[in-house]
Image (cartoon, rainbow, N blue to C red; front, side, top):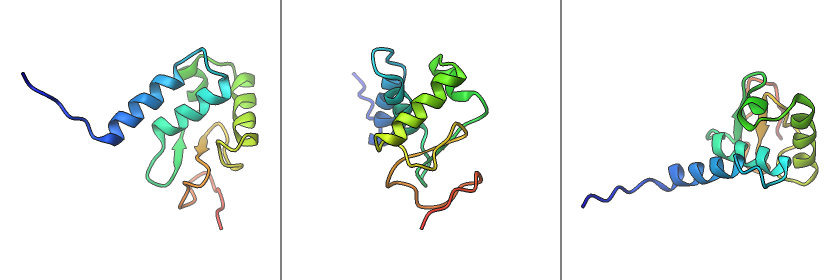
Length: 102
């Protein structure tokens, strides 16, 4: 019998992605989990136009509301928007979307 051991990064990303797809969660939580599953080494999860809505089955208005709620609840950085979700306390560098960090 062969045992396959996945790195903790791959496992965590898979769990976060699974939760992003969990329709029992609130939309803001799903957007946060999507960000966690796709974030890069600088704390940014860059998105193509409309990607969040397509991946989570949400309308443009639902995506905007979910991002706003996630920002207000401290899950996403205030600089987050539909093209770049930024995890609170994780962003180490600005991205091409012209975010600013002190």
